[in-house]
Image (cartoon, rainbow, N blue to C red):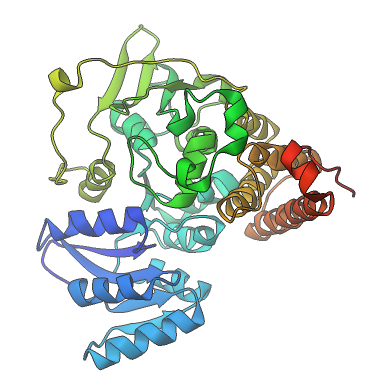
Length: 413
């Protein structure tokens, strides 16, 4: 290990957060060393990253991708060990020589390695929303028991963290905090007439006006489910109940979130919309390091606008608040149903307006139940996915006419 260098595992190295993390790392030679990189199946990009950053371990989730990467690295004369599967992800997240783990695997697949990093006492840079959404209490307990540190990478939660007194943690009352406000861009359809949303294409939904993100999170931004998931995350990160977490639409994406105090003060974090800012903040914490981001010119921005979200336009936000209030398994069911809905929308099998209908139908089938162990979370996730698939099958059986009309099929027990 280099003198004074921090040693990293990057979970989800080929996604947008992973790529931006490695961009920041490359700007600071000698400050960081990469011990492990992981990906699902993007062999070409992970191969290039391995050549550049020389990790000891590379992990591919899919077996064929792992075999391909291993062959190419051997041919290139690289000594990097290639491992495969979920257990290998957990191993990479808990390597003894690693002190910092970027948890950037999208979806429920990131839960187990994130928990492994927390239990191993790592500094966990959390970009995986689903870990806190589906298993908030379990992850928070793992952080406490393992002596880990949890730093949020979502620009909104990172902004709240920066706007709170250092060391505040979840003691909002002691810090005099009245509420936290999460900003949302409103996505590409903030002003689209409601009757046109039914005809939205995947390409249109993925064309975010401010951020460059993966396809799944881009759709979540368009439905504002991403903001709903962030509301649930904020509950665990900051110990705030649902009545103290508000969402405000801010189309410029310059104010990344705000904290309101009981004396009327509001403290916010501002910056250009670039994920490298929160990534650099977390990588360097408690120090500040350069991120390679263009500095903010407020005179050029000119004006900042804010508005309340329209729950008729964004029903996914309403569903997320309902799941937070229900607690227990409800957020895990919400997340699973949303993943299935978005996957099918991107594949052209579901209309944009049917995403919240599928999620609501699945939530109605599952009374919230307690989650004590990781297996409870995974079981809720499996059941919700199965019921979401049943809903989709029923929709297809009702024929193209019903699908065009957007009618929600009935679900049987």
